[in-house]
Length: 370
Image (cartoon, rainbow, N blue to C red):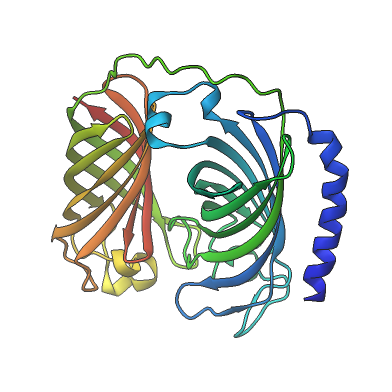
């Protein structure tokens, strides 16, 4: 408790210094936010129980979409697109069993996020704040035998709630609760992944003068109501406790029904080709945990939503295997990913395959649409 009070005292001294620097505007503005955080829990998959607190914070730039509204942002109801720098001081966090000094090292993340207003109570505003990006971890299995973090370069995923209260036309104070997950998507193994639940206090201030929100005059929607996708990706899963990798090629064919400017419902078939299959005579080189396969192909059917933001979209699907000669009794899977439209028929894509809560591999490739 004393440590928390000491950190908060230093923080509010810093906030007091920042207020005259940042205070410049009123409403419908882009803002800069500083958020000081302390972890209230850290945990990992499997049996790696953790102890100790992480300290840190976030510096966020919030681009107010109402300054230049688009149909998808108006329909989706988001307030801002966010660029977030996240720092965690992890020196006090260790595993309970067999702890290693400086086990995790500090982490540095760069995330893209969205702010979704949920509700207002008087002047108090509550919002949902998801984010996704890349994160650098100071230590990994290959630097100090840390079994929780498999590599220094990771994917970062966060979800949070923020309660904000304006104290002037220029300054808003906030209280934040979020969970940050990072792991490498199976590119290096072991890869249990780390989750940090944090509470924080923040101050946000305007960066420029308010402007009158223009009356939206959206152009005719140019998306297709019905479309077909054909995708291909290439990726690799790490070999256990090695920097070698086992390659996969993923194929996808599916149908999309566009419900709104920001939402489509999709269903399709996933086929994954194994460049290396599981061999009981070479367990260390070929064992792939829940993704271990005796055959070259596995095939599944999946369904789920696509969230569209202009030419960029996120997707998630839940699937069932119709063919998978697996080492373990795995019948279902998840996929998640993103794609960016280069034109009306071609997009760049990234896609992760997941069994239960365990990442298989991340693939990068192309998506063809008709």
